Length: 319
Length: 319
Image: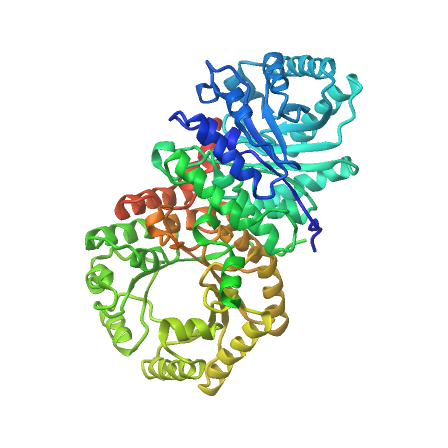
């Protein structure tokens, strides 16, 4: 009835992606404290900071200082985000991050036009430039991704055929550069996915790419993230991006429309209760989520932080 | 791969169950306005008020006034909660509510002992008294339910065997009273259920009771409600209790531990996007949820209210 994996890999995106949308400047020391707390929960991969232009994203004008201040923990991969050669140079110059490349395309031409003033052809051109940049720096490229893979606020539904065509474009870019992709990433950038759609989409991709690993990046815009993750797990997906406390989202009307990723601790709870190993200490993760909430200074989404883990109750009852 | 129903019946519990936990007294007119707004969304059943002792639950000291003030809409079943003969008399005296009986038992002896100072045997005795009361008043009894069906904060995990034994006790009470139950209700009272557990549990119950309808009452304590509902839908369950805006829950730390039911609009979104008819106008429901949030005066959980319906975006794009 399902093909649940025995264990999953979780890439914690909360520090980079979640903090970026906060309007108030988060102190450098708080960013470091959150990442250090997360590194002690058993998480194997944490996306820490963004090396974008400080003019565009003032929240990350301290990216280098944050990375320099981390207490690096063996066994944890610390990554950063870079969208151009300048960002990649900055990330590599820290000497403290895992540097990896990828190829991603948006399935939505309307999203490209609206948010990046870019045609699909121009997007492919920028990707060729990034691939060349990665190759010049000896950075491995292993993941090919499609963004807005399930729907788009500016274009509407993304039919499966359009998603598959976009994925073919990703593989074509890899082929022309002599790159072998190992993982296919699907991002529900604007929270359009529903469980049945996830099941059908992954089935179609597995048919065409049976030897590639799959990775999901799910936003909780309409409350479907956990159900979509469960649909992915049932199809054997074992690689997920998540965000502690659902960072990036906020129940306040003032943040209307903001919605975080799949909440890390809710997803860990889902997995561990199903016998899927995450390697993560859920109660330590809940403490890190409480720290994240104190740092951003407003309620975060995510439920297990408030409801508590069942293992804590089981242990108390057994004592 | 799944046995999705073509349409589902939704019993809106938000007014009664959700408002009950609010500390601030909600004005009678606001309660009426919320129920009237909900009655215009296409909802077929609304649990309006509670006829418990006003000393125990001051929030419902205006139950009669609320019911008297409703603009009853044809096609909508308005119900109330009553736990003893006095409450039933009050509900019947309004002359405006659908009166129905049921038999429910808790699967958790520890919950009974802790919260009601009652043994399982004493609980069965009180149920016999209620059944006699319903029969004396010619109130139909069609639903048999198990509460704390999936786990309990005071007892821990509820093994499937214990759930099934409790359900047998429910049927035994019905049998000895000559009552024929049509529907089996399972309540995840304290938010312990996970999707795999829902699938296994419903499979086991369907094996034993193939001719009974199933109904789920899911709490979102640990963020699993939508995923659990999806698991229920995939097993063909077509009857759900929900709560507009996730009323009953709150993201504030001050309400720590409080967690509402499955959010009505998130569930309607889940169903409609999967082609399962609900009969409900999602955008009207979102407006009712916004009203609920204004009335309680604090952020409510639930995501579709913030993220918006996809049909609204589709319509705007098509225009």
